[in-house]
Amino acid sequence: MRQTSIVYKIVCQDCNSCYEGQTKRHLETRIKEHRNDVKKHVSDHSVVSKHRLLHNHEFD
Image (cartoon, rainbow, N blue to C red; front, side):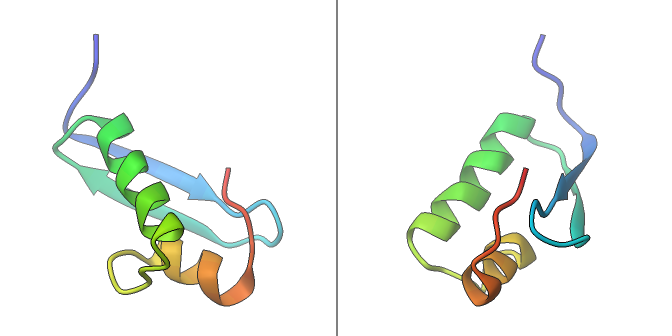
């Protein structure tokens, strides 16, 4: 079963930064959005993509 209305945490692999988010949509949908923002070099949609693009760090 795919859950909705969840809280999630994404941790940077290169430093101790982490991002905690909440979504009412499916988690895999939201994670795909974060990944697409990074691929498209869009930093104003999420702090995950902004951190990745500014510091060239990877998230788990």
